[in-house]
Length: 199
Image (cartoon, rainbow, N blue to C red; front, side, top):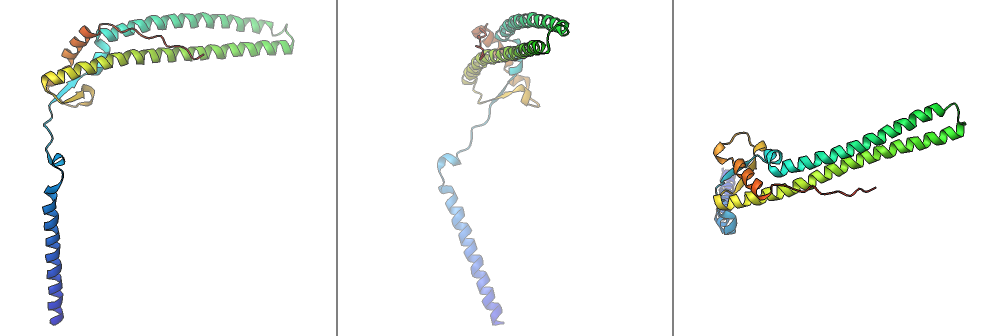
């Protein structure tokens, strides 16, 4: 009987100590930094369809026009070089029975090296076009960001989301048309830079 009372006394003391510890922790919580405890401001959101802007803005269209001209020039040059190599290949096939084995092997090696060089040139020109497009689009994106910053300052929104990443939103918070109009005024054209070849 006595052992039960002792055990019960120990259990009561443990419970009291545990309650005191919780009370101390609860009392200490408000002592944290006031900056952490302050509530966040309510989100005021806007939505922008930046993919549409990169398709339909005057700047984007000017970039596409310049790239098409450059791409056509590159393709014409490659087509001429391919035609020349085709003729070389046909001539080499005709000379197979006339040339010695060593001479044919040498000419064949030169032909294969020329084909590989053309492939490298094709890949390099494709890389140039990709880099030029990326550099020009960065100019558009920078102007787009500046316009959105200005609108956020004047209209009071503090959160801007891409339309492609939002499942549902009200047309009232879609600022794409306004951003597009401002961008067309601010940046009607963008010069696509020349990208130097590494070869």
